[in-house]
Length: 386
Figure 1 (cartoon, rainbow, N blue to C red):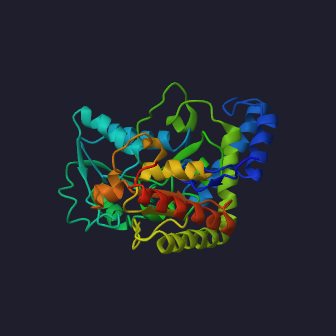
Figure 2 (figure 1 turned 180 degrees about the vertical axis):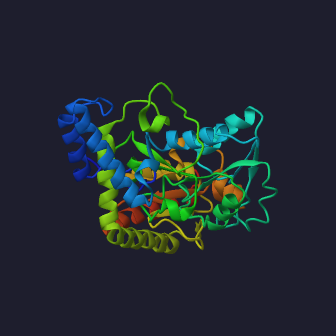
Figure 3 (figure 1 turned 120 degrees about the vertical axis):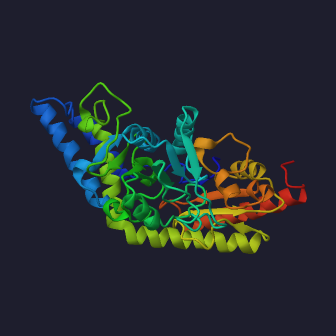
């Protein structure tokens, strides 16, 4: 008999909803033209493309012409960092947090190797930018700032308004990595005041392989991919119309169901948190006093090795994570937790549970029983798997 598997790793990816799969399949079957072609098939594909662009812009508080489609969040983040860096201005410093997603952090490090300087906002013990702007340092040499809007590992949501105001006053483009935020919390691009904002469909029950970058009107941004006029010459390559239509469908579904989804996920997250604090004491919630995504719980079990717990839970049919999937394989403590002042032994004992709308109360209760048993077993064994 096949063992039941409970997916509590939704920040890694989510399964496309049936309505989304139907949209993608329909356009794979019926939308045959290249949207760049001028004949009837091309015009039909262009209409689907532009309708999808308008739908996404409406949900995200942007203008349709500010939406540029990419292959996903990683490409969108790379396009923002490299594109803004090359877009103009003599400054050679990038301002960011030490907890940025690897697709932002590694792009910045590539520029650092080319002679750019990186300056980091300090984080407080809840994972929030600490006392901006006093700790930001001089901003006159900053070419761009990059901040993750909602953290993929802790779920902490940044208040970016002070930073956006400071950047706007100094004409510094601000990039927001909103890959974990879009489809989980309301995001209004114009209200946030950023120059660019990234998102990826597979984080909100859309198809994999598609995402986008919002680029504020007037922002100077050099393309990463050249060789075509697509996406206002900001991203060359034939647009993946079926995936784009599926992404628009997924985002519109979220917008219609936002209140119900938020209530459902918050209740499940709080139930999981309360039961683990009760059954697995001592335990530490990362970012507990900060605003967090409704679906994300990062919890440390002192005396337990997180990697060993991950393996033990996998054997029990519980899927969870140590943090960013894009940084998996690293045995080092998560940089964001270290930046929060978390001791290395607590960082290594931390596990991320992230929920989706496909989870239920029964899933949570099933998981708690197995998590509590695994934590007790590992503590009795000295923290490591036996």
